[in-house]
Image (cartoon, rainbow over all chains, first blue to last red; front, side):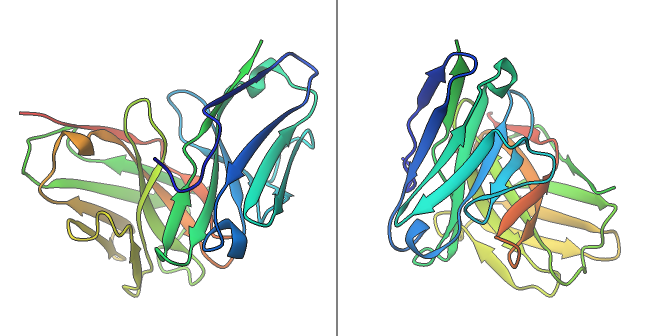
Length: 110
Length: 121
């Protein structure tokens, strides 16, 4: 069970907006920046957003991320079928002195 | 263009040592803002960070694996390696190597394609 808590799954229809949450604590999200990764089956994860709310190069502006206190979220506006993937939040933990990943959220586009 | 490629045995026996190598092209392992990392993903499960190393030897390890894990860097071949000792079935996973930028949002910005390692007799 991951220290960073994400919902196992979320779903939405095309054009809808979905939000994926990531809950942590003061030693990780509360004191460090959050990054999000997108992973398609059988491939390596790809950096989606970084430093809480910055989109990585080439990422559509439909994707936006934010952080507040000990939680972070990834919002996807105007859902498209090609957004169907797993999404992982990630941050540093000062107590563990190491990198943490959330458990991952599978996004299904209905 | 940066490329990372993992290589190593796909099958390891229980209690033995898992050894993998990541060959990096398009960047130098001695670049002063980059660390080099290993991350794994058991089948059907999430990502687990194993450790990150700087070419000088400075390293960070996952505390839960630290006693069994060693990462090393060979600047002459531009490769870095992972050794995980006393493996069990729980170490069966896809192993990814990645570039880590600790001073740039602590991002893993480039990844290898991953290599599947199965622990079984």
